[in-house]
Length: 132
Image (tube, rainbow, N blue to C red; front, top):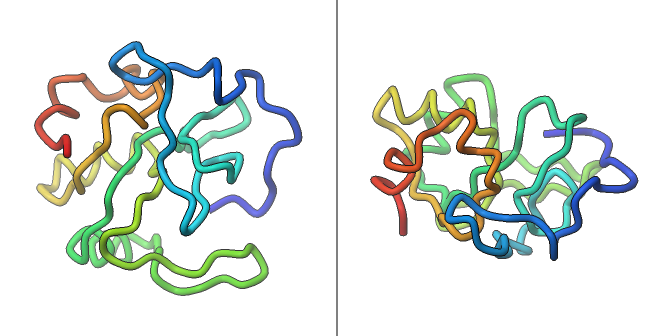
């Protein structure tokens, strides 16, 4: 989770494309997700984690992420982060999602809300296997 949000995106939410080469759909607003904290899984070069995969997190994935050193369940009020619970939609780093996939722990994804840049790391066929 980033402590600062970039000031101006290179690509607006209305211009961003998803992995299906369609307009990028909203991932989630409760809690507010995305690199820009605008609900969209869109990124820019300053997002070193590439928060581009829109997931519906499960208890198994949250436990897995915590074991990998990424506690997504504990609230962090200073960053307006309430902590995630199963069923929440969240923009996950593409490399972390791929790692979870390789370990058999990948959460479901919403293809229409995954930014097109995700395909630079994860093949569409792999994402389709976990589509909701």
